Picture 1 (spheres, rainbow, N blue to C red):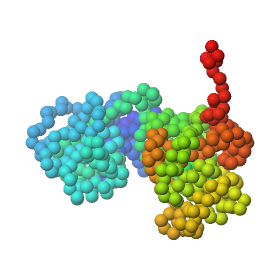
Picture 2 (picture 1 turned 30 degrees about the horizontal axis):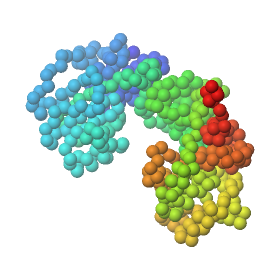
Picture 3 (picture 1 turned 90 degrees about the vertical axis):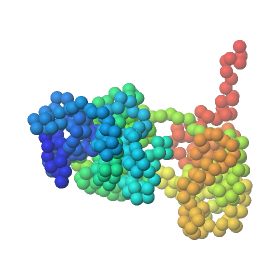
Picture 4 (picture 1 turned 180 degrees about the vertical axis):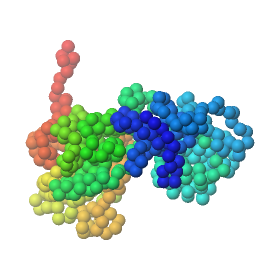
Length: 478
């Protein structure tokens, strides 16, 4: 491995040249602001004392040019200057323990910076011009806990900040956390927190993949999920070309990105599904699709509310439209998307049926509705007169939004005094469980819910109160 000084696109960088291997590639990838140069065929790290120190810590045996070694030979740190103007370039490196944002001394009008991992903390007085500048940086956020602004530490964000605030910067403190908990749980060489942008080649292949999914008539939400999942994997494997990606890269992606960043089981499963489908559209790849393994399946019990809790939620909702929406989800066991996609003609009041079209898995089904529900729907119709959709938003003929529906339930649950983290899908789970407890055959429940497999419906037997209460503990017979 050899490190030298190069100029690239008007900036000075450390260039890192080494024979390709996965371990070193991932180590360099994890350096702050590092990037791969396709033109120079090497990794680039910002030139300066920070970059020198980071490379030395990561690769103690690497070979620097003699001039660079002399220029960046470590020196004993001096005490912090008392004068604020002299403190401008003062840096405290490698604090032993990281805890939030610990800013240096700051006088009124001065700017204090903290650089930690992949974020930059900015402490400043309230000033419209300064705040407008910070907001112009993508993903800038106000941190209420530490009363500072935070922006991602990638690209040229740090340079922009230093250039804008200039001599108003009184202190720059670097804080690096080792993430001991993550490393204890995931003993990998490198933990990746941020991924580089997609290459032009990957963008082209993803466009072909998107067209293939649309040709296969996948739903809009499924296409979006698969594109995002495949894109994340391709961003991780750069600078490898798609033809160079191997099965082991997916294992590394799981252990170095998905698990340390606390992605769920379902997210990991979606990534595997997306990668499998993506590499069906790619010719000449080293990926063996049949050898890609999904994570072990989770077996979680459905969350169920009692009939009293359901009644409390519905009775706490005074708005007739809101109450009708929540009541219909529970009364017919609907998914959120199924409710929002209903049209007035989907209600057959004479036959007491609700017709659900193009639901999950592109399946149609019919669900019975009672006189009580029909009466509620008639009252709703008289008041709101929906035209295009059964439930419309504030704008005429506009579909009701999913976020507004979620807020309705959240408000009703709070008003009913229920402390559980209830979601809309809990109403569907409760519908199925209450049907089972009332003696409805499991096969009919499967049809009413639109489940493809009876095994999916059988999970409700594990939470059915009637079934559990019929079991007598041997302790009671002692």
